[in-house]
Image: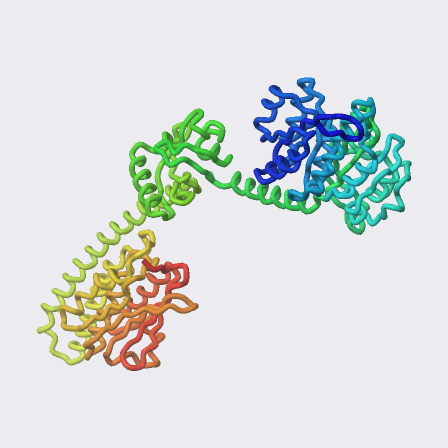
Amino acid sequence: MSVVYGTDIMLSLLFVGGDSDMLNAVWHFFEKYGDIRVETSGFDDALGVLENDSFDFVISCVGTSEMECLSLLKCLRDKGNNVSFIIFAEKGRGSDVIKVFNGGACYHVEKEGCNEGRFTEILDYVRKTQISKISGEMPEYTPEKLSDIIRFLPDAAFAIDTSGLVTEWNPSIERMTGVKREDIIGKGNYAYSVPFTGESGPCLADYALKNTGPERHGKYPIVNDGFCLSSIVFVTALNDGKGAFLLLKAKPFYDKKGRIAGAIETVTDITRMKKIEYDLFEKEHLLKTLMDNLPGIVYRSFNNSDWTMKFISAGCRNLTGYTADEIINDRIISYGSMIHPNDRMRVWDNIQESVNKRQPFQLVYRIYSREGEEKWVWEQGRGVFEGDRLLGLEGLVLDISKGKLAHDTMNEINRKLSLLSSITRHDILNNLSQAMSSLSLIQDEIKSKRGKNLFENANHRLNRIRDQVVFTSRYQDLGTESSLWQNLYNVIEDVSGVARDAGVSVENNTAGWCIYADSMIRAVFYNLIENSMLHGKKVKNIILSVSESKKGLCICYRDDGVGIPADKKKLIFNSDYGDNTGFGLYLSRQILGITGISIEETGKNGVLFEILVPKNKYKKY
């Protein structure tokens, strides 16, 4: 056994925490001294080691969190174990060190890797302390040591003594306030509050000196979590008078006899965080306002047959009669049970097909409200995935009952008008046939040239009336059906047979595109082909192609016929133009115009019709 400072002392140390390299370095350093026994342990095993063995000192690393170290110390003290506790922490962990000190630690050494100089500092301390224990004198944790900790804190911090005099003012708080350390050390009368508020008054540290505090710091609440006091305040004197939000934390510190010796207060500028918090609140408030005022609901649900809701907006009450609390997690009713029984399987199949393809879905179906009222809804949504895992569905459900009712009413009116026009056309054609038969019977009775001219004129006009009536039957459904996405190539192929049967070549180069157009779009291309065959005179080839530009998708229709004279190009779209009825191109333009599509004739050799589809009315497939 070696002699230490003239006294034979055998020391036992337990080193807790740190990685394997650190623990190995500690063990090899201390074991070379014959008067020291050293053991190492992780935090999980430390209490068990201490219950089975006694040690003069516990040296604890402060890792990514001070909580393990603080928890170990608290457990020891609660069990009545007053073993000397030394903190071994990296530089910049001053605030954590203070917490552990206030929990009952006795010394702090800054850790710098496996620097043997720090181990030597620990060795020197434990030997001196052991001698002091024998002589009855304990080393005091000096104010100088506390000042070192505060100066290295990354947050702005200051300390006051029990008289309210400033004893420490670190570099971070100098930068925050512009007040130099030498100008404020030793000052009292709440001088430390002036740089923040512009006037003197108590700070959180003053309340900490009493180890208790009021419920409010001015108009701001104070939280006492049993370890420290904290408060979030707005001060006006910082940032060139613009003010700042500050997070304040204050805690008393003690002398070796357990008496309050002063208080430390840290000051963190959280203005930027509060700005982000406010912006987030504004966005959330705006989103909530929008969702709550929708004529329907925004939702997130599980992908199950009940469509169990994880979240549903407040608009569900107006739509379904049930509150969000009643629908979420199927507490009172599931959304799936509200769907009309005849629509449930269709809704399920459509959504599953879209989810499997990872595509958005749109559908219209019926639900029953709490009062038993049948409502029509339109839903759009999509699956939410994390990698390959489906998390659920998100979407929007809107009440379209009024629009559906209006649509159904309009369809019924159109059906009746169509029936009426069919009957009227039938009667007109019958009367025309009788009139034309009567004219043919008297044709041979007309001898004069003037009478024959009048006969031909009347016959021509009757034939024109008949052609117009027949033509209107072809277009009686214009605009009565909803517009829809249609395969352009298939539409053209459906009407090209009339030309090919007559020996005219139709080259269709439009594959790969869909356009959003009226359901009568086929009549447009039929009319173009029919006009080529009737008026082109020598047409042998018809070519259709597409090209995309900044303006949209241009569908070009060409033939190799005689073309249209320049002075007639604009007139051909008038309702009264043409050798026959004059309605064909006029109505074609109207059909296209329903969804914003335009048509112009720009050909020089043969016809060239350019049909321009707007940007949002076409897509590739």
